[in-house]
Image (cartoon, rainbow, N blue to C red; front, side):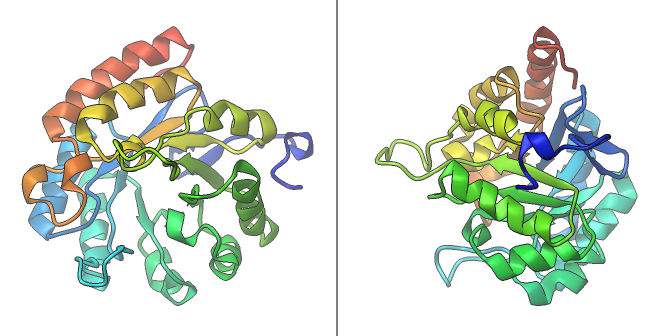
Length: 269
C-alpha cells in the first residue's frame, strides 16, 4: 500500500501547503470558525488567529449537518470571503468539499481540501479529490477503524495525490459525556504504520470548549504534527458548533501553552 512506511521515498514524510509544512519540526496550528458566517466575522477571526500563531485558516463554506434544517453555509459567497481573509492575513485556507461537483469552485480558492468524517467512505470523492492536484486533509470517519481510515487515504493517494494529511477527530463510542471519544492512541499508531503526517481536531473530538486545551496539549505530547481547532469571537452566538469553539483570547493563551509542550518533545510552534 502507498500509505505504508516501507513505501516511503526520498523527500516523503512531509506535506507542504505553500510555506506551511506538516510533518517537520514545527507543529501546524489550524484555527478558525466552524463555518463562514459573514465577511466581518471571518476577517476578524482570521486576523486574531494569525496574531496568536496560527499557520492556517479553517472555515466552512459548504457545511454537512446532521439536520437538514441547520445552517448549511454560505456556499460560493463563503468561498469569496475565505479568499479575502487569506489576502488580508496571508494564511493558507483549508475548507471542506462535500461532493465531486464542488471540486472546481472549491479548488479555485482552497489551498487545501478537507474531506470530512461523513465523506471518509465516499470513494468517488476520495478519488476525484486525489486527482485534482490539491493537498488533502482527510478526517477519520466517526465510526471508522484505523484500517478503514488507511484504505480511505489509499483511495486519495492511488488517484495521484502525494500531499495528504490525516486528522484524528474523535470516534463514536458508548460514551455520551463528550460529543465523540478522541482517540489519541490513533496518532502514534498511524505514525507507526504510515508516512503521512497526522494532526488532531480536539474541537470535534470532544464537543466541549473547556476540554479543547487539555486535549490539544495531549495531542502535541503524543506526537501529533499539528492541531486543528475552532475559534469564534462570540461562541454563544455561533451558527454552528459554538459549544466547542474557543474565543480568540483562549486560543492565544493555548498557543503559549502548546509552545512549552512542543519544546519538551523536541518540536516547536
